[in-house]
Amino acid sequence: MNWVDLNCDLGESFGAYKIGLDEEILRFVTSANIACGFHGGDPSVMRRTVALALANNVAIGAHPGLPDLIGFGRRTMEISPQEAYDMVVYQVGALAGFVKAAGGTMQHVKPHGALYNMAARRRELAAAIARAVYEVDPQLILYGLSGSELVREGERLGLRTAHEVFADRTYQQDGSLTPRSQPDSMITVQEQAVSQVVRMIKEGVVLSRQGVDIRIQADTVCIHGDGPHALVFARRIREVLENSGVSVQAAGHK
Image: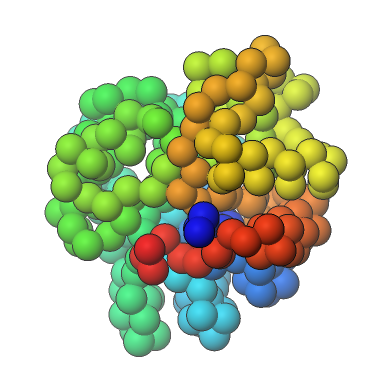
C-alpha cells in the first residue's frame, strides 16, 4: 500500500496579526510545521499551536526560517553556514521547550521559505542545517525538497529524512520549484493540485512547466497554510488519497 504524510506550515500568526486557518486545517493533516518566531509566530502563538496539534493528534515539527518577519522569510539573505546552524539550533530549541512543557514530543524539522530553498541547492548550508538538527536531537526527521542537497546531507549524517513535494506549487525540469516571482508558480485549481499529488505518490512523477515528466519521491506533501485555497485543498486531497487506497499518516509512523 502507498502511504504519505500530509504536512502544513502553521503557527505563523504573530501579535495582532492572524495568518492561516490553523484550527480548521489541523483536522486534515498529519504533521504540523510550527513557526519559531523568526519569519512568523511568537511565544504565545507557538504555545497555542502546539496545544492545538496535540489535541488533534497531529505530529509536531519545528519550522525555522530566516530572521525576516516583514518578508515572511521568503527573501534570500546571504548567511554563512555557521549562521544557518545557529539559527536552526535556536529556533528548534525554542519550539522543543513548548512541546516538552505541553507533554508532547517533536517529530521533525522543516526549514521555511528562502532558507529551505537555499539549502536545497547549497551543500554547505544544507550540511550546517542537517548538523544542527542532528546535534539537537538525532531522532528528529529532516524534511527537505525531494531529491535536494538538504535531504542528501541529512541522510549522510544518519538522520531520517522525508522527501517533500508540494500540492500547490509547480516544478521546473531540474526538480526545483518554480520561483514565486513567476506568475505560474502556484496552482490555484483544486483538481489540478489533487491530480499532481496523486501522480507524485502513485507514479513517482510530476509534470514540469517545460511539459516533461520528472521522477520524484513523495514521502510528505506540503499544503501551505497561508494559501487562499489551503483548507479546500487539504480536505479534498485527503479525501481523494484515502479513497484511492493511500494510507495518510505522519512520517514518524512509517
